[in-house]
Length: 453
Image 1 (tube, one colour):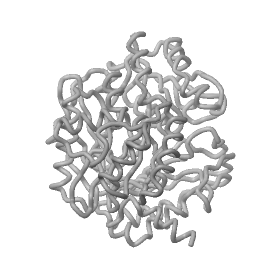
Image 2: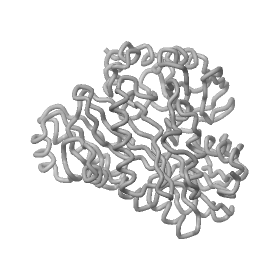
Image 3: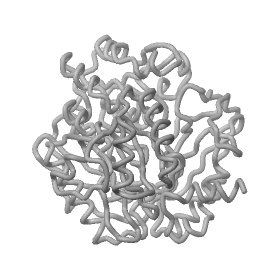
Image 4: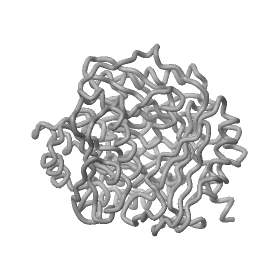
């Protein structure tokens, strides 16, 4: 195993940096952690073989500072770089510079990242490949009158979303014609500020929808496999809170069709390494529509690992090194059910991000309970980055047992010193729609409306 890479720089922080370091240890690969001045006492630094400070606390000064990251990789003699998720993981500039300097970027080619990072081009590619896409604009729109005409032609409600970037930035659901132009303007200003691109897509909004996704992996030898589907419909402001695998009320026949479409798309690109192809599923029509491709490891990858028994990060590193996949599709089977709970540093009323020192931390354990986190007693939760503290991952033989396990594990986790969203997650787990599995992407908004009224 140790023949793949000698030393990997991890261009990230938090729980995903810790997760990658642990995978590298199993493969016998040395690791270099990068950190900002705000992260000088973080867990990923303590676990890595070496560490390099790359700048100030703001992301643009450190984790988005391409030259500082590349310089750290060269100075420490790294032969590979793992981007993790978020930050620069889906920016083509990082793999381009890696290639110029003889460092292997653990991910797809820069041209593939560029093509799939543009939702406009990705949608056109999916359509060309024969994969269903949501009715709406064929390409990004900048002019409000043109966008209004498109919205009227497909009928309300419609969804406005950024062509560039993701994370829910700029997304707006518009229910009435009279609201459209103002909402379009607000969305455009947000995406221009966030991504530097004012173009947005206008698509039909599907009210009763589930968000489903396929985990895929490809190597440089033309081999592709999928690791089944996940459901990520529990979202707030288009940010995922709870995920599960496999999707509970989507038939296996439909799941197989969606997985085939995902593989068809990545094959057409010669996609290399780990990725996730996302779809929206119309519960009424039982049809799926392409959304986007995430060209990186996903936050929710552990639930796929739990039901398949496969270490996706290790496989990602192996594929990145040019190795042939050590398994075929028939080798991948699905066992039991898995759920992931994202525990964030948020206040219990408005769910706004919190920061501060963690005076005491205890994580749950037991059969079928896994916690991926960067927390420890005495850790400082910084206000500069994402509020994710850690993920509680549950596995059981069936969904009912998994839900019971999720409740007690959630209540066993103790974080003293910083408020968390644990009580809110508990409300979701006890919600009748969620328990039945009939929930859609509107669950959290409906639940919050009930709480606030």
